Image (cartoon, rainbow, N blue to C red; front, side, top):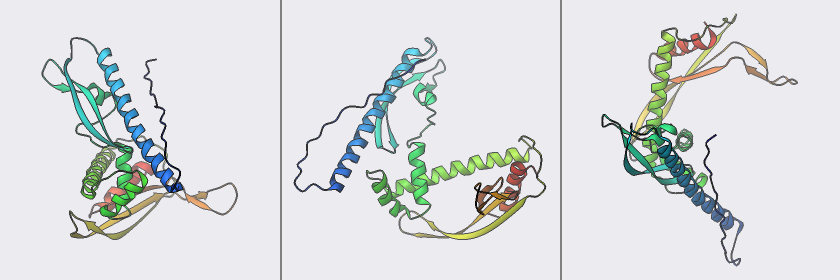
Length: 253
């Protein structure tokens, strides 16, 4: 089995004890670990790119040299160099991107994007900047976070629409329908955030839940949980239609 070796360097730091606090040590160790992680990450990606270059089928792809790329991760920004190839038709290929499932023009890791989207669900983008600094470290512009969240949101909606279209075409496995199914829905208004400090008005967001009944959560006690539960969030007049489609698939209605 082909492998690569990931090496973590040994780091020694001498610091004066006078005036030192627990928080100082924590911040210092965290920053050092982030720096080490970025270097290790860059080296690992470089090794994988070299491996793919050496193992590629000769004659099909022409090596046109390396191209640098910045990528935002949960450790901060990394810079790595990947080999670009051209096929016989002149089309560019990056074997590294294909091997690591990096989509075209992707500049942020999935885990980092999830963190930013999660924090943005609870506070303003400007407040998320401080949350990112505390949790991950490093600077991040609130407008960059906003654009990242919007991009991820569009991808989620796009995939959701594709899934609902499959359900409309009955493209899902059959299973026995339950005797009873429950659908509940409600709505709330959220304040929109626009570029800068301008308020963007309000948007009605609708949430739905479907389930087939209740069951014991634990072996002992009275706590219950919903059986075969699924949730759906959307907007617009077609919300109930989409919720019903999802229920049709999940609960075999």
